[in-house]
Length: 265
Image (cartoon, one colour):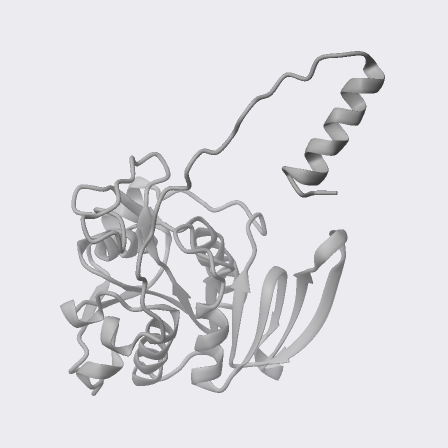
């Protein structure tokens, strides 16, 4: 099996986030970036499928040095090679532009039996890139996956999906397919010293927009379907008011305030 595991670099959750001067995103120059948590579960699932069925695991990421770091970590965990989408033109991509670019590089790399992504990223959390990627590739897909059984010989998958209310759904899919993996599906491994040393000798390929034959208006901010006008920190609007009187008077006053001021009744 050939499995591609997509990894997105995101700011470390311990980072102090500051909005930039244009109020369109955060200042990210001095932040520490790590792999998005759900993508770690996706990579671990890819490695387990490889160990069970043999094959190759390819880690794929888009960005600058922050993406290179998470790719090297993926190689140290056990992935066989890495593809780094490295081009200033990719900066500012939304989910649509990112998925379109990922689909191009996957096709150029000869496709795969399976593409795994996290169910959502830690920064934006929209959960759309994986499903858009499946549409661009024209492959079957399943979301919020909590269990995977592969049958490479029959080119099929059995997966369990997590639904609301603690209910799971079992579905069968043909391969190739795209799966978005839920948090907690497994226990991601740590990179061993042997793995870290071995990672230095593994293939690490950088790919640009020109390598993929993509026009400038199809990638990054130019290829995005929406524009962020402003981001802001929610203003605190909490207020405390003490109500006095008899229990009956307090209750009547509270109901009146909920009805007229809070407008929740």
